[in-house]
Image 1 (spheres, rainbow, N blue to C red):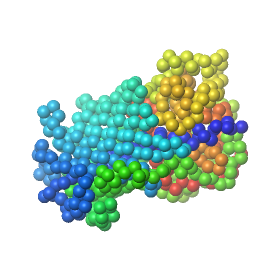
Image 2: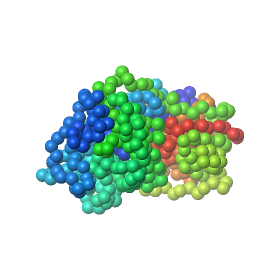
Image 3: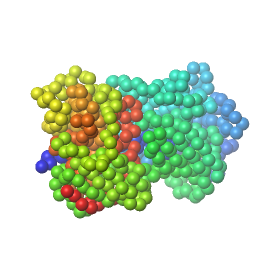
Image 4: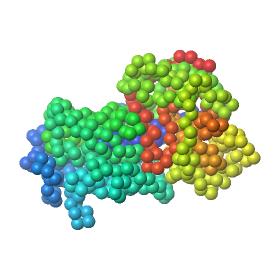
Length: 547
């Protein structure tokens, strides 16, 4: 029988764990690449449309500073200070704003460019309000070479800060969560751009219809260098708060090294200034407007990304978490589900057409053998065993709690089952007000939802020598699928799923996997990116049969 509080803790992380990934898309490169070029007040170079826009919205707070350095080439536009305010909408609801500024500065006595973005977003998660503040900055030389960069995310009192500096052929990133720093190095080339590479490219070298351009730039939060292809199409009439304007449409395709692809669209004037940006992911949109309209909380709308994005399923599953196998028909109106849902030893994906798959999910329990004919289990990596800033499995308090949880159990199978039960009972307050807490924080507060259950279970498992990772996907509860997090523990030479929010001794066929992660380093959130290819993309799930 499912625990009485299991539904509550299952409606969990869609606005929190996936949110950092989504925020990166809002702030860095058209919802993955730092939106917001900045509205400027240049006199000689203003196009009539942009000039009219600024005249009608004179309260923008835009400014022009003296040019501190010359253009790196004759074809590049001189850079003046730019700043702009944007209204941010998701799934048609206004949820916050972004303020972006790009300005020439002096760094160690040399000319440089500092680009900054600040966003404040307000949504709900299963009825609980959630506010997130995000800042990104990068410092470059006049020709775009990155010197340093950084980010800060604040949510429910939890701060995640990342600082990066270029040293030779490496970018050294230090991520600090709850006071614990963790360092990683990324291979780096001088031509790689920072968080605002797209914006700087467009304002320094404005594009013309028919032109294409490819950049390499760091994507914040996921901390990967992506390839960004820009294609300038045609001018279009665009409706903005200040009226109608003729703007150049630029399609942006971002390809991450992990294989994820995101589509975004910029509408820019002749100076390269973006006045509108739209992302296919979650139907997100940013419109240039005045500071007053951008920050007007009265205009913000309630959007619950957990409840509003729940997926109704027909027919119903009977005793869903006791099922041994469930076969689904999955349709994605705006995407190919075969590229979103992975093949695993207990999840088979069969393509029906470019928008539809047949998805078979088998139960994953210690007492059950692996499905016949399934794909091979990948071996655990060092990152599945070692502690990190989210999973502090080497902390004395974590180690002591893990020993208490396993008691006298001898085998890894018995220990894993004991840990699942222990975490389920250890969290006394099942709520949605907690940010993406680390295992040590969960140990102290004993509260949270599915993400807190998952990070604590992973930490306790690693503390007793069991490789562990978190799984991200969907769980079935009362006729609907909700976004969810659970665990995979390496037991008996295979990955077996455990869900401490349910404590059923494994999972049935009512969990659909999107990705898994060891939550290591600055790129811990990269595993959540597949969710962006599902949220708001017209996902439909039908139960074909169950056992």
